[in-house]
Length: 270
Image (tube, rainbow, N blue to C red):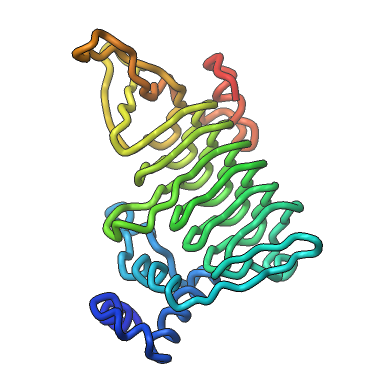
């Protein structure tokens, strides 16, 4: 609570950024994010709670950091934020060209293929971040999630009240999916290739006699594919992208194979 009060005070009075005590408080928050001791968003009994003060600390971190040259073998970077280190001790497998910034949390058993994890993000145990996937600032990714090749999980720092993208335990996100604007994907949900979801995207359950529309949330164990619906504009009638819930993952299917099987059972590419 004391740390939170200090961050809120600095947020209201930016002149305090010159103080070494203020800078120490900001760096303490970022260090705790890096270790997984703090999270930008966390599960609570009523759903998910966004900790805005932590996002404020991340935003305040940038102006107190100096640009530095970072050399990694023959590669050179020029940035304000250093890279994560000590992957062996963390129990994380990192394939060459994977990058995670300091201030992101990557749990044990995570595999980072050539990919990118930004500051404030949280990637939980056993998750696979596949080739050219990105986990944006403050995004929350649960345990045993699979982010397939080229998946874009959007980041969100400002406005501070905006919710980050949340992907819950066991979800499978197919190739080239894009998730932004605080979208939440429920536990063990399966998104087929090229599903694009924003907070305003229609998610239509077509498994019953009548379509049921929601926005911003994919239910637990739902199987989702890209779709479209007709919409009238001044210039005429056109098709607009949406997402279709076409089924549920089956209880009888083994958890490790059901991710792909759930798509194949519904004739959807991975």
